[in-house]
Amino acid sequence: MNEHWMPIYNLCQPCAVRYDFIGSYERLNADANYVLERVRSPPFVRFPARQPWYHPVTAETLHYYLCNTQRRLIKELLLKYILDFSLFAYPLPNITSEFCRQ
Image 1 (tube, rainbow, N blue to C red):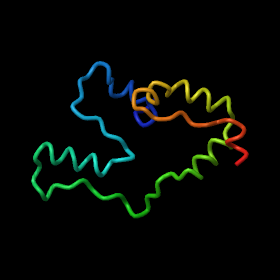
Image 2 (cartoon, helix red, strand yellow; image 1 turned 90 degrees about the vertical axis):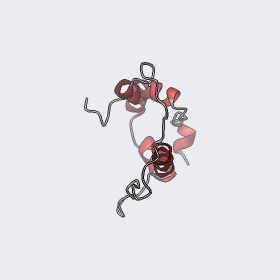
Image 3 (cartoon, rainbow, N blue to C red; image 1 turned 45 degrees about the vertical axis):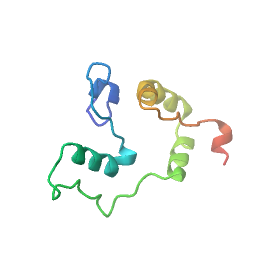
Image 4 (tube, rainbow, N blue to C red; image 1 turned 120 degrees about the vertical axis):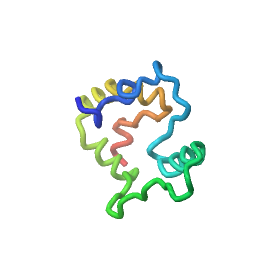
């Protein structure tokens, strides 16, 4: 498994390493600016802007993929990434049939 798909708890070993800061992709710009400020980087050092072609995942996109993927596969994925959800306080995706009828 390459590092792009590896669970974060395997990749970063949060139980073995004492991190000073843990950021999130959802707050990437704000977190990056916070770190740059904390390390007292020169003002000209900035985190790069997102590419113009980037479009974040929407609730509709997530709904589409969750509802069009076999539940067995989703359950297997949840088992693989359950510690990431737990350690980083992400809510588990709703894969109930009521959710997919919306």
